[in-house]
Image (cartoon, one colour):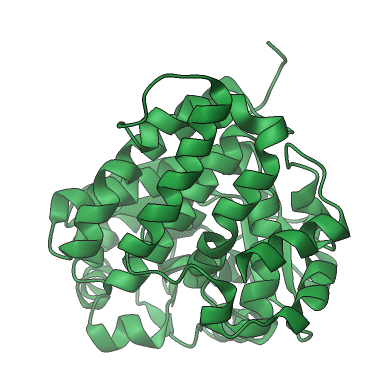
Length: 384
């Protein structure tokens, strides 16, 4: 076994209703006032009310930034940091989906450093520290609460990532109460996203290790066992908690064994066509897996009966192919689109997307099979 390193969020609380005592959980970790980063939908639905009341009761005087949108742009990060700076925030809380948590991570960095945002895109370029950081996911998908990664959409509709150990939060709070009644389409897309994280971590060419493998397998067991119940019955608290835990475990896996071509090809879909990150991944997942078969069939075969227990033991190639076919049936059964044309992408867009995908070198190097421009174009064409 090769040597490896493994890092994750310092503390976790996995408990239905835990967000209602967020003030107690944050007390002693951060000083008032705290900056809570979220989106307008969360505030409109009242999902943050109990958490905010708890923070008030603990004397943490929350200041709310609620302007985060899907695929957050740099201006959202800068605006959140500006609000925190104006109030002299003593800590940051991300409360929402992956977009809110990603903005919260970068705001916590910028509030503790003079380093410009433009200088930290890439891997390991953050020089300073950050403010205390707590993450409270309201969707089960990104795993951002346990990853040292933040993704931002730049002005050219291109996504860039900041990868640095400073982005790992101090505390993650997993409360299924916040996900009850989440729209089925969001539940499905974020759930498949989490499954992609686990699959790509398990097949990652770099930094794959026994801990990430164990986490990926357990994540897939939980997610595969709960996703259909969670999608079709939004009030199933047990399924929701399994989805949150599975997404978090997948996040821990890919934070240490990075994702690859599925994500690389998904980013141009989200950046140019404003398709959600989870759906973007879902649209290309079976096609990238089929492309990877020559290099990853044995690894896919290990995962196949975990995701689809009806798959019988056989040759690795057959089990891997059955897993791909399983996803091709599961994805539409969850109510998700399966073709790029269904989200407004046409053949004329393929060269542009393939060119953009090839810029995601940080991800492509992890793929079990090398991806060229022609390969990316063929994968997109097959997904039309």
